[in-house]
Amino acid sequence: MAKRKVIITCAVTGAIHTPSMSPALPVTAEQIADAAIGAAEAGAAIVHLHARNPVDGRPDQTPEGFSPFLQVIKQRSDCVVNITTGGAPTMTIEERVRPAATHKPEVASLNMGSMNFGLFGMLNRFKDFKHQWEKDYLSDKGIIFRNSFADIEYILTTCAENGTRFEFECYDTSHLYNLKYFYDQGIVKGPLFVQTVFGLQGGIGAHPEDVLHMKRTADRLFGDNYRWSVLGAGRNQLPIAAMSAAMGGNIRVGLEDSLWAGPGKFAESNAQQVTLARQIIEGLGLEVATPDEAREILELKGADKVGF
Ligand SMILES: [Zn+2]
Image (cartoon, rainbow, N blue to C red):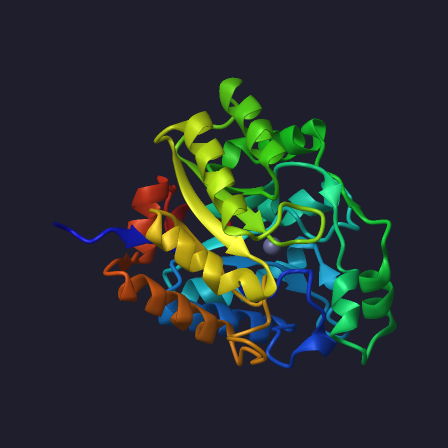
């Protein structure tokens, strides 16, 4: 029997962690490109990308901020590029969609519901910050990550002509039902790439029961017309990855989601986390999907049809 192929997505920098937390967190375009290419070489079929201000590491959602690393990644790797439309919870929806609308990637992320977004827990672990913005951003207990039905529809319609497919990020059960609404309206079509997210303060927890509940709900709502992936925040990253791989799902790792490579051990690179994910997959007797296999599984348009 052929071995099942498991897609590894690597989210290399994101907008949750800040530069003072880890020297491994990519900040400049060169660092982001190198991290993405390194992750792809280690086995990631998809790289999920955000941009940052090269001087202070602040999240940057200008299309121009993405251009330098998108071009380098395209030249040096055949991995699938996934551009964020989440940006950071402090940005407007119009700002958030611009990089994906401009660069027309094969995949873009799409957050499926509004939620509290608590990053303040990290202030217990990290005390010294090089930039004032980091402290202000992390200590804000008033953040609501707004993803209303209108916002989601705005992103879907803005990107509708581009052939971009979405990584539907679901941080709670209601987000699956929100996705079901758009699915029933025919606004999104299968196979849906559903990224269930666990352990972010404000979303569902990271208990195995939470993982099972999200999978059961997605199974009931979408049947076999979805591809399941998981993302566990922080120390939950690898245990949840292992659960998903064992239950037929795919895996997302990367320094956007966790700075760790084991208890008390900082990850040295994104590639290191991809290698740990690969070991789980291969240890279970499964196989890591190549970029082209991921394109087939997710029915993507192909690397020659992007806008960069
Ligand atoms: Zn992201």
